[in-house]
Image 1 (spheres, rainbow, N blue to C red):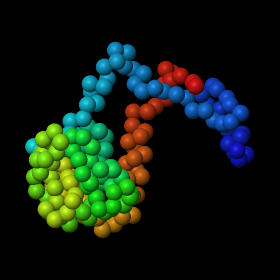
Image 2 (cartoon, rainbow, N blue to C red):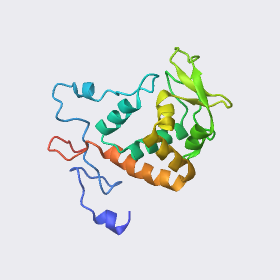
Image 3 (tube, rainbow, N blue to C red):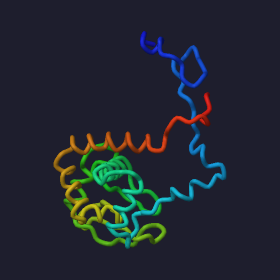
Amino acid sequence: LDDAAAAAPSRGGASSSKFAVIPAFCGGRVDDVEGRAWEYVEPTIAGRVGETALQLKESIARAGLTTRGYVALLGARRALANLTAPFFGATSSTPGSLDNAYFNDLLGHDYAAFDESPDGTPQYKATDADLYATATDVTCKFDAELGAIVMEYAVDNDAFLAELAVAWTALVNADRFDTPACLPL
């Protein structure tokens, strides 16, 4: 431990010879005494055909995100992993790499409806490559506001990564606050 870490007061009431600072543990919504808060956080956008750009933007606003932040988070999700059930397939030519290839691929290919997912959920497939997309991806490509952000991130990887850092920090800190109900480890 460096001197600053060793001198730092312990938060959370517990101490350990291995760690100088033990953060308090706050296991989720302490205000939800009935255990039903999850009902209010169900996703409203699932990437399915028929969801509109307006619905997507309303969902982004309800989540407390900016459109730029949402597009950056979507791009990171698509860059780092293939689509998951009920969708399937790679969305980027460089899966597993945190870069702007997803945005370049989205703009650089035409996508057509593709109904061969394992459970029949419609999605999209590039007409000239083995790349897939959801309705949300296609909406981001063709909506004027979202599409402008996709274009910016496609040409400026640094802008994408900078916005991703801001959006990720906001996302992981959303609805996290100190309360007396948080329990020390």
